[in-house]
Each structure stands twice: as C-alpha cells, then as structure tokens.
Length: 491
Ligand code: ADP
Ligand code: MG
Image (cartoon, rainbow, N blue to C red; front, side, top):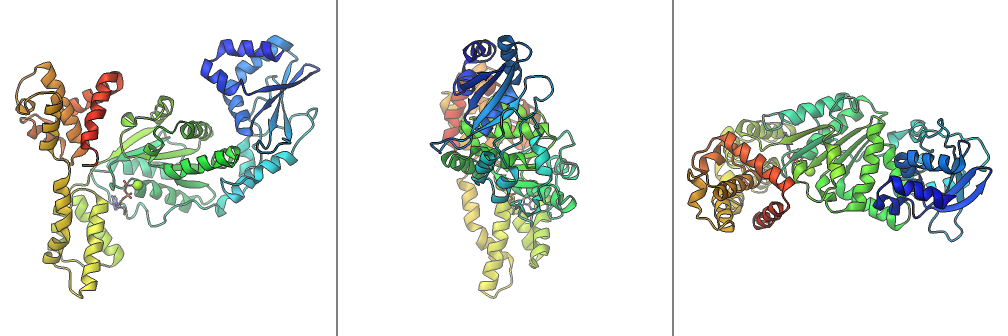
C-alpha cells in the first residue's frame, strides 16, 4: 500500500522533496484501514504536516478509500538503539489536520534551545494508537508557560530614546517604532533593516525588542544573532536535538535575527530558519531582521527565503549627515556625563563621517586620554586622537581607485567613464563603477554623479538599479561583478 502511496506522492511533488521527505519514511503497519508510518523526528513530522498534508491525504484516499487513515510513529531518540516510537493519530479526515503538539515546549523552554529533555517527555507521552486524537496547536501549549524568565538576550541600553533620528534612518526608525507598538499586526512583517557596519542596525532592532518588553512583558521577545542561531542549530544537529531547537524558536512572539547575511551559503540553517519563519509568520508573530546589504545582494541566501523578506518592509540605514552626527555626539555626552567644548564636538562631527561606531570610539578614546593625562579635552587632543582614523579613511577604497579598477577590468581608458560617450561597453563600465562607488564609499549620489563627468543623482540611481537587475538576471555579468568586488573587499 505504501509503495502505491509513494507513487501517487512522487507524481505530485518534486524529485528533491521526495527524496528528502518521503524516502526516509518507513511503513510500519496496516490494520483496519489505518496505515502507520514511521518518521525520523518530530520536526520531520511537523514538516510533512505543514507541507505535504494534501498529497498525503490524496494518496491515502486513493489507496484505502474514504475511511483510510494515516498515523505517524515518531522515532523519539535517534541516538538511542532501542528507539521508542510515539504514535500520533492523524486521521486524514477533514477535521484534525492540525499540527501536533510539540514534544515538550515547556521542557525545551525551561532549559533553552539546546535542551534534550523534550525527547524524554515525548517518550513518556507515548499514546496508544487507538485513542481519539487530541491534537492541539503547538502554540496553545506555549501560552501556559511563563516566558518572563527566558532571557531575551537584549541589551537594555539600546532604546528609542537614545536612538537619534535623522534623514539617514527616518524610515527604518519609524517602521521600527510602528512594529514596536504593534508587533505582528502591521504590514511590516518581517521588518528587514539593512545598512553598513556601525550605522545602528543592532541598536534599532534591540530598541524594538526593549520597547515591546517594556510595554508587554508577557510577550516572548528573543534577540539572536544569525551567527548564534547558526551555531545553536549546528550543535543541535550534533547532539540530535533539532526538534528541541525548532520547538524553542516556535515559542517566540518577537524574533529578532541580527546580521542574516551570516547564513549565506549555510543551506541547512536556512532551511530551519525558513521553517521557523513560516510558522511564526503564519501565527502572526513578528519577525525583525538585519543585514549588512540589501536583500537582492544577499548572495548565498535561498530565493524562497529572500522572497519571504519581501512580504514585509525593507528599510535602509544611511551614513548620518553632519547634523545627525552632532546630535549623536551630544546625546552620548549627556548620557555618559562627558563634557567636551563645542568646537571639539563640531570638529569630531566634521571629521568622523564613516559610521557611528567610529564616532563613539573616538569619543571614548578622548575621554580616556583626558582622564589619563588629567587634561581637559581640547581641539589639539582631538586632532591627535583622530590622526589614525583619518589615515584609515585615506586607506579606504576611494572613487579614483574604483574608477581605475573598473576601467582596467573592462579594458577602457579611465577618462571614458567621465566622458559623454554612450557607447554600450562604456555605459556598462560606467554603471558598474557607479554601483561600486555607492557600495564602497560614503559619497552621496550627488557627489558620485559629480565625479562621473557631472552626471546628476538620478543617473546614479538608474545605474545602480540597472546593475542590480543585471546581477539578478545575467549569470556571467554577476560573476564579473563578483570578481570585481573581490578587488574592493578588504580594502
Ligand atoms: P550596526 O549593528 O549597524 O553595526 P550598531 O547598532 O552596533 O551598528 O551601532 C554602533 C554604535 O552606534 C552603537 O553604540 C549605537 O548605539 C550607536 N548608534 C548608531 N546609530 C545611532 C543613532 N541613530 N543614535 C544613537 N546612537 C547610534
Ligand atoms: Mg550589528
């Protein structure tokens, strides 16, 4: 019977999915029109239920008729030689096609995602196959758990109050506030914040988390870097507790995942995140993510995951302008009780235009020096402190270098990039150079246009867009760009 079912299933789904999700299934027993199949894990079971319930039903109906039923036996502990099967009822009749209760959310929660205790709970809960199904939504169980004692991993110093607003962050900040006030119910789900290093991504998304914790303490907010998420996942695979890992994350009300670019090329981690994402999103939970680049440039992230990001809002953070830098310094001074003469503040805001973290770093080193040398902070000291930073800025990729490198790559004289010509190969090279200028320098669009023979900022926008589109659509173009990008990386 199962072989026939598989034939039906195979005809209905992709080869890869079939191999991943159906080949590992072992038919156990057929009795009174009830087919019991054994699946390797709880997670596996939930996945089948979520993605393949229709095709499973279809195959069972075809083979066993309308009274046919399917039951799952879950191998509770794969590491254990005498695996204890747990049987869940899953009538294929209309009613009970709900997700099964997760093995033990409370247990998994209490001990954190790496707990292995849920497995044993599952074992203890083994029920006879004949019992009527009492399937609950896994989220239901989680409501009775007091999540307050679960550490949100938030840094409470990151708040909206000390997040200075400027043109550079207006959209991201207000979207963040909206999400913080109404998590899961705005159309900003997921909210994806992207921007270069040190521009305030982590601060902003943590502020969202802290705000929610402060206003609705019963919500389970969880902040996690994609790196930590990945490491936890890998560890859970190693110790055979992937289900616990998944169960833990399925309890979260607000999931904040920082630096998703870290998951690039890590397919299994992405698959797990995809699963969690879908679950949470469907249940109306809020998801907030950050990335150091726009989603379209997240090479190595699966398309189906990227397409999910588009469901919500993507907002970018730009480098702060002079006024915002002034405000950030002043706010920081007030917060830390530092006193710095106004002309020094202005000098700093003028000179440090890379990112906010750098700005803060300079402030801290000034304060340290002043207390070390028992000397008031003055302009001289500030200039001294800034010397190394200014050298670093000079070592950074600059426009000339980008133009020279791109022109060389396309075997064109660099002057042509600034000339009027509209010859196709020149236009392409020019657009690519503008694209990298946008990506690798802090020049404004206007300034970039200026350095390319006085073109205006809309030309630059158009160029950047054209190159992005080509990267998406043209494989060989994409690899050229990647090759070029290597020349700028680490510069
Ligand atoms: P990212 O995660 O983008 O690398 P962070 O969020 O870690 O950047 O920010 C770097 C530092 O700059 C942090 O100390 C943060 O508090 C500060 N910062 C960034 N943006 C702002 C802002 N708009 N107002 C106040 N502080 C900011
Ligand atoms: Mg960060």
